Length: 366
Image (tube, rainbow, N blue to C red; front, top):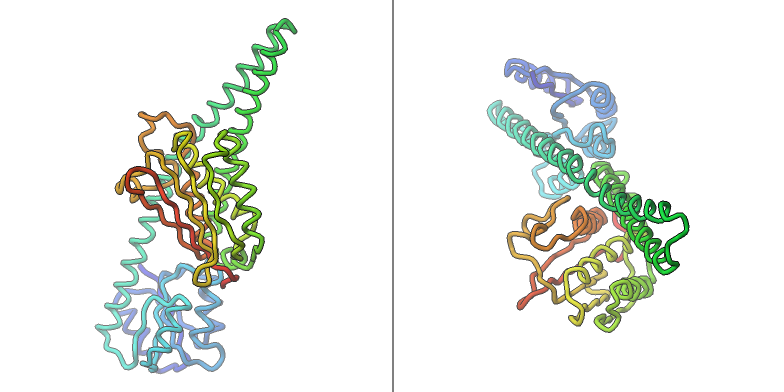
């Protein structure tokens, strides 16, 4: 039996609606004001909230605002009842997170239809979330042991060779094996970092307070950060002459740590999937009040289907190209940009290659 919280300061009107809901087979909790409604919502597991807008103690707008800031209640479907049919009230309610409006007076049929629609959509959302969680758990279970084992095997293997030789290896060989161990260790470090960041993003995305906190930061010296990162990445791939930069400072509402992570993954992807001698171009500027950066390569690119199917732990054509890694890089960049209120677009370049366009707010947003 679905549990509904009904909040209205007019007792007679509240009683009429609650009777209709109980006759419709619902379990009903009643509150005469927004404060009591919040208390019930936080202590009882309700499936849907119906609240009047105009109430003396705490109105419906303030109530939904507070409930949407609480992780325990932020996803509960919320229907506002109002005698205010103006668009401003509707817009404000939707901005705060209302799922639907019922304009008084409404019929019993309209009430039941609104409830059934919202409950059905909420069930669909839960099922989709559970499906994604199952897919995520399965991907982690399959991907993590393999991805950890590969660099770990290199570290253990080369260390064992050095140990078994009892100092008989030439110095050049020891140096080479040491370099291999270091490379495998760095790969392991980045792998663990990506899994950790991905988990943090997933948790933060469901918490409005965490999202708001992330969006409060502003970075101004973006050109310097991008220039250093680009030149470092090009040097790692020994492709300094392939790099073309056109950078100007554009303030961005993101921490230096996360902006560097986004660009690091996108740059690594551009160099990794393009051949030496082919240009990688990076631009950044303030455009229409936003920080817009583009990274363009002339590699093998991605098909329209691949772009549409991008997801965590997915690597396209791995059997053909045998590219190491979990495929988390692009999805981490995408999620970091989106959680900061920005957009990221991947465009297949004519003649091969990929252009990535990142647009982020220049000023902190709420």
